[in-house]
Amino acid sequence: MLQTNMKSVIKYAIELDIDYIESFLGYEGDKVLKIITKSKDVVDLIESYAKNLDLDCKYEYEISGEHGPAYNLFIGVEDPSVFKLKK
Image (cartoon, rainbow, N blue to C red; front, side, top):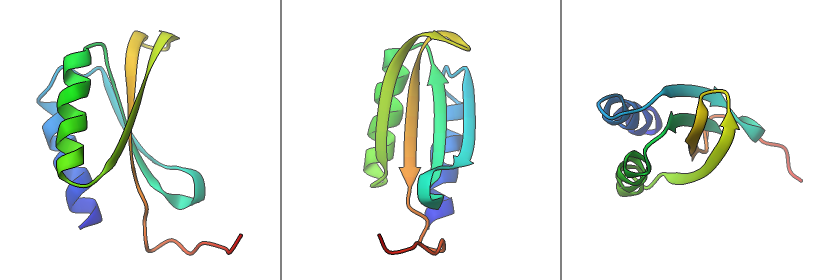
């Protein structure tokens, strides 16, 4: 289910006007999908799509980023297979 949702978002995002896409392990082993685009409309479309899949989504606007002024969109998914220590 986890990988299916992430793959679905990636397939959807690739068809849109994006500049960059990356997947990595975040803090405490959570899986993170980072998408960079210059279009606010694309951010709204991806955010809506992710919410329909029950995925958390956050974005920020970065003025002087590596790809110029752009929106950085982050979709995080907690991976239940990763062992976590009690705090």
